[in-house]
Length: 197
Image (cartoon, rainbow, N blue to C red; front, top):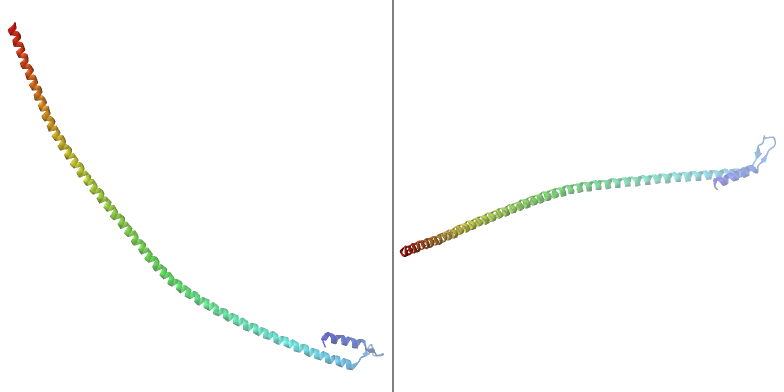
């Protein structure tokens, strides 16, 4: 019987009691029913206590399970954290190793670039030297050609001058000859005129 039912039954017994005159409002009730109600109340109380104890036990069990679960989660988290830390350390070491490799690769690349720059500079300098030599040779040949042309021109002009001198000499001699002939003709003309007179 539930506690509320017991209380209703107890109220019913009280209501059904009879007042006894001369006992200042006291009444008579059915003792058997009252005893039965008390037994029910005791049983109900025992059941309530048992239920409360069961609840307490369940609560303790739940708390224990929760503590175990908490410990498990905590341990798992600690293990995970340790694994993450170890992984991070490993990754850091790998990165350091990778950093060394990258550094070495960068140094090698820098050396290659520097050597390529040096090679390019040497190629440029060689090309400049070759161009300078080519220009020098060209200028030298040009000077030689100009000198040769000048010498040839001087020789031609010198020969021409000699020929012109010969021609001029012949012209002068021809003129001189013509002048001499005119003088002789004049003399003869004058002689004849005198004789006639």
